[in-house]
Length: 285
Image (cartoon, rainbow, N blue to C red; front, top):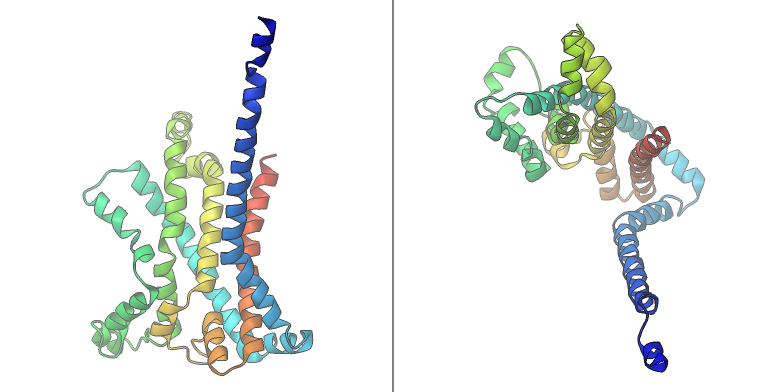
């Protein structure tokens, strides 16, 4: 009887193969994650580094110090900061209204907010040309007031605002829904004004969604290419952004300059997103 009982598998012995299979499955999924990220993110970054330093550091530094490159980067940073500020204000308002209020056409507005995700940036630039170009719908009005939008800085700003519109809103809507209205109602019963309630109650609760939305908006504005190429034309010294400089440099076979500028843009965006995530984890400890 005892020998027959000892021949039966114990629960611990049966659990060991299962746990071993689970461990293999876990490491397989981790390997897939690293492979996916490595192919799509790490490999291009490594290639940019190799291309930028292929002729040594002095040519790389000289390429980045070129006045045209500096002008393009300053223009890009200015546009990105402006877009981040605009969406920080108006994107927060839109997210607030979409969550807290009900109004006719709300579902239509909710769908329209995702249009920049669905439309090609090149199409966005072309639509802006149809509105603000020389023969555009608003051309007579712009001519009358002597305002130039197409192939000028205002057109680039409009294009970048369009393609970056959803990020702040889509980050804030789920956070506002999860936060609810109980704390806001409690603040109102204690005599707080609407602005005081938002500043001292709502904003601290949604601050990480707000910060992530701001980060993604800024990073997306830095990397916009298609829309600004069509509406801005990439005029050197006037409407050329960092991405348009990279395009021109590759076309003119200035590979070190193109690789160097692309590396700076890529690393800046990567460090911006990773820095935000690190700060959040550090603050939540």
